[in-house]
Amino acid sequence: MPKHIPCTVDHNRLLAALPADVYKRLEPDMESVSLALGTVIYEANDTLSHVYFPTTAIVSLLYMMENGTSAEMGVVGYDGVVGIAVFMGGDTTPNRAVVQSAGNAIRLELKHFREEFRRVGELHRLLLLYTQALLTQMSQTAVCNRLHSVEQQLCRWLLLSHDRLESNELVMTQELIANMLGVRREGVSVAAHRLRQAGLIHYKRGHITIADRPGLESTVCECYQVVKTETDRLLTYQMNPSIPVE
Amino acid sequence: MPKHIPCTVDHNRLLAALPADVYKRLEPDMESVSLALGTVIYEANDTLSHVYFPTTAIVSLLYMMENGTSAEMGVVGYDGVVGIAVFMGGDTTPNRAVVQSAGNAIRLELKHFREEFRRVGELHRLLLLYTQALLTQMSQTAVCNRLHSVEQQLCRWLLLSHDRLESNELVMTQELIANMLGVRREGVSVAAHRLRQAGLIHYKRGHITIADRPGLESTVCECYQVVKTETDRLLTYQMNPSIPVE
DNA sequence: TCAACTATGTCCGGTAGCGCACATATCCTG
DNA sequence: CAGGATATGTGCGCTACCGGACATAGTTGA
Image (cartoon, rainbow over all chains, first blue to last red; front, side):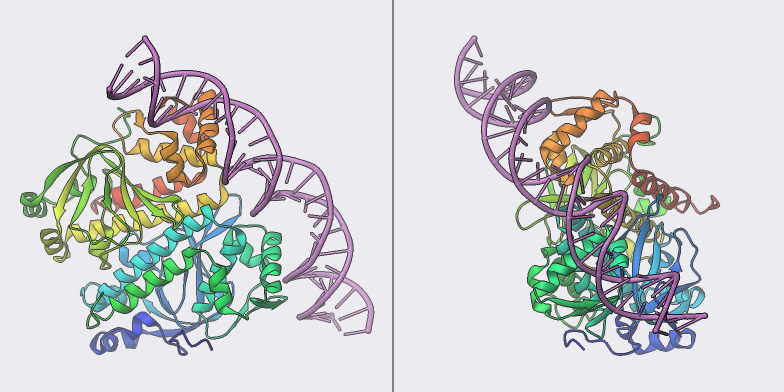
């Protein structure tokens, strides 16, 4: 388990940061669910029935083109929540949320969740901070898609996933990675091959192992660090106002 | 003036949608400012002193790479607000806001603005809806950057700008458009040339005129309509709850 | 009115990634 | 353990876009 991830089983960073009283109010409604790889949590324009706080699962936010091709715009793990639209007011979004790595999540029905959100206490504050972090992730994805190579983007994707995992091994085919990155499967194959030759990863048939994380970090484009630093700033320092910012 | 734009001088859609009492409270603090082309409203990681509600101006949100190249992640006009981070809680963002089309904006100092936002009334509700719309725009930009040609993206950019303008003429060099799209100036030249040959636009030295809007709309990729439809849904229907949604 | 500047047009070779075809390797299941 | 399904490797021609060089055409100001 990589040391840099303060993540334990069934632990969600947002829920964990709630004050005891808020947590107590929500707790009776919390339901731990197991999410299998590929599960679609919501389709584009679906009205949601729950919000999901991933713990060990990782969820990918994808846009599906009319012609069937897709591209990932963001990834949510134990550091976030799936179902932003529920509290932002729009109720739906034009993208799809798919389980990218099997695991658990804590889900809440809308009724109690909204009730608590409308108290405009810590839950409210944390979720807006998280939304800003997601905004940064999405906008940096836009930049990265425009300016960087498939190999660099694969590094970014691997690191983003690794940050949200307890293990060094991702259960994931190159085909699926290609769908997320919005590139050809062959392109991922070639890039993965190069990363393997450089000793940064190992892989075999549906399993990728992070072998040299520092190496990946020095290969990746700046986009990864920008998102990582900004997310930490928002969800670590700002999350706990007792730690002075700057 | 294109008929589809319900935009009058010094009119911002968000401010206009506020109930009379909220507007009255904010009004004494509203300051109309004129923004020249190229003005930087804030730099990456700047702490803001005001939020800006563009009326006739258009503001571009850009990420500047370490090597100086840039890419646009979103555009804000009379339908939005510049300075999301102020109310989302993060105070700063890693991008830059630049005036893409000269015009006016109404700005508010943080103190009064935050006071009103914290009442959690209509201002609060509208700004969260707007933030969701911006999220959609950014994520669709990510998709478009990945999957579509420079020509289609130029169409998208022209339509997004046109939607926020009172006139059919954009004062804008191809060089600047290239900076926003994150492509070479020559690429924009070639794409613009083709659009001109197809009779969709006219242009000369720093001025582009939309000649055939329906034609542009049939050339552009689906990304434009997705953002447009979703923004309308969020900021028209949801904005006025008396209009039933769906 | 001419010179300097800026915006646009055009051509070049180079390359990354696409779409396709097909070979090989691994896994699963009957 | 054989055969089908799935995952990965590799080659080929094609296109879009890049990086650079340079020509041309408006625009501005001395």
